[in-house]
Amino acid sequence: MYDFLIGQIKTHGANYIGLDVNGVGFKIFTPNPYGYKQESQTTIFTEQIVRENEISLYGFATADDRNLFQKLLNVSGIGPKSALAIIAGGDRNGLIAAVEQGKPDYLTKFPGIGKKTAQQIVLDLKGKLGALLSDQTDLAVATTMSQALEDALAALVALGFSEKDVHRINKSLAALPDLTTDAYIQKGLKLLTK
Image (cartoon, rainbow, N blue to C red; front, side, top):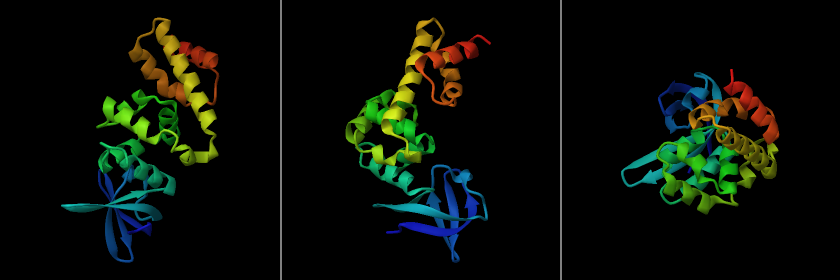
């Protein structure tokens, strides 16, 4: 019903913002409500969900995030709250690469997403998300980068480091610019042996 709303952020909640549009306050569920500055004028791309006992409005900073939300809703077993939780992770390219590579384990880290649902997401969305990559990143490049990091993490575990320790440094390694598997391993070794 609503494509987007332009207004001023008046309130924040744990999972929503209150948007004042010419004196009408809209309660909009959003992935990261505290990412919006209060009293700021903003455009929110919206999706209205109608159920038998409620009508809810979901909002996103970009049209691409809304499109991803819509695609996730088409997956059996994914409701609006689960789709919102996935988008709140903020790693759209990582999500798309995981789906395109057929790696459901990446998806199970999101709340409410079990192994079967993760497999269903991969099955239903593989080949349908490439257009949503941000920053005009090529899917093959995103896939290669995440594959190089994943191979490096597996190699560190094979070298005898615990999965817990390797998982702990994962974010630090992922924040680095594009590296080869060998370079990720070297950086990982330095982090693990500090």
